[in-house]
Amino acid sequence: MRDDILRMLQRHTRMIALLCVSAVVHVVLITYLLNEKYAASTLVLITPQQQVDFTHPMSEKELLNFPVSSVGVSTQTETSTKTYTELIKSRPVIERVVSVLGLDKSDDTADATGAQAGYGRLKKRLKGALGGTWQVLKYGRILESSAFDEAAEELSTRVAVSPTRNSYVFAIDTVWTNPQGAADIANETARAFVDLLSDISKGQAEGARQFVERRLQEREADLAEARRQLREFKEQHHSVAFKEETAESVKLITKLEGSLETVQSRLSGLLDQLTAQNPKVANLQAQRDWLKESIGRRKNDLLQLPAAEAQLATLDLNVKTAEQLYERLTREYEDARLREAKRTSDIRVVAPALVPVRPVKPIKIYYAGVALLMALMVGVASALAMEVSNTRLRDIDGVQTALGVPVLATVPDIAAFTDQGS
Image (cartoon, rainbow, N blue to C red):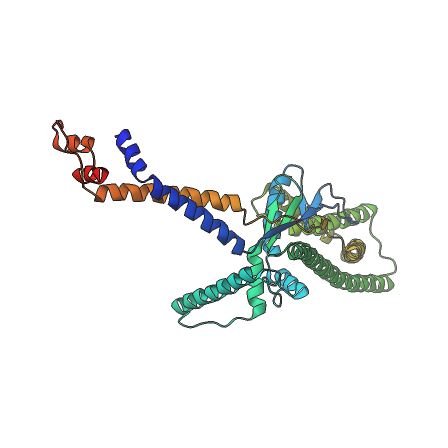
């Protein structure tokens, strides 16, 4: 069987060889018509920063305003990289790159030769025709789109993010038809991305500052009202005073009120990132419930005092609690103002893209190798098909195999002898 296949291939060697040579030559010629593609890459570094906080110290660094511990760095980095990938391909970034570089007005075939430019125009027409046909089949009509939208859509397909595993570094990769364009697009995409994150960070800091400012104004009004009520009560009851243990109880309740405010603030921040079943959240919820119970119990004890003393203790407690909360919000407000003024970004470009020297495709040897393999497969398959479809007996072995009897003699080709004799 093996020998039969070899003999069959030998009979069609010329056809297989011609097919391989033709395929390789034509594919190599086509690669000269294709536009060369150049790749550029911008290296970006994520920098987890230690946030400045006047209210309470934090031992964890933050990445995009999320805490990062030494245990979860890999998971957090991978999650952030996925987030960055979506942001880089978002409409604001893509539109800025297209607008700044004028990609909707540039022509990819401007630097191409005559044959390449003609092939590019033909390719564009075919692409437009196929796209129109698909739109008719899908929507029942052709949807008009501007050059800007088409450029933005094409750019989003040519920009990619390549993360470096277990690190804070990733690359913004771009493939374009000319080397300078590839470098410009990669660098401008990185700049637009960093500016977008800076704007987001600024907006968040400004919103946090405004929120704390509103709370501070409310607490300032509460403090003024509490002081007024206490002052009026003292003016009305000159001889009223509470005992030393009552004063200590008021101080303790004031401290517990401050601790409750701190726990509630931390709990609100964690609930934005974690679920209620998380151990950290459950621990803070238990602390909050204990503080509320303790404060309520001690306030009930104050109600058992004589009426004037109980009222004085309550008013004094309101003043001290309001003062403590006002001081805490003042520190938070200064913290928010500092963050807003600082406007640091936890992502920056560390290695801008350089203009590439060599194209990444088409690599002619790759195309030629693929064409050669495909031609060999087609040639062998064609030879097998020709042998199966042709039932003639061509040699002695074929006759013996088909008839099952030995060949005793053969008749020479008389025409061949006649030609030799003449």
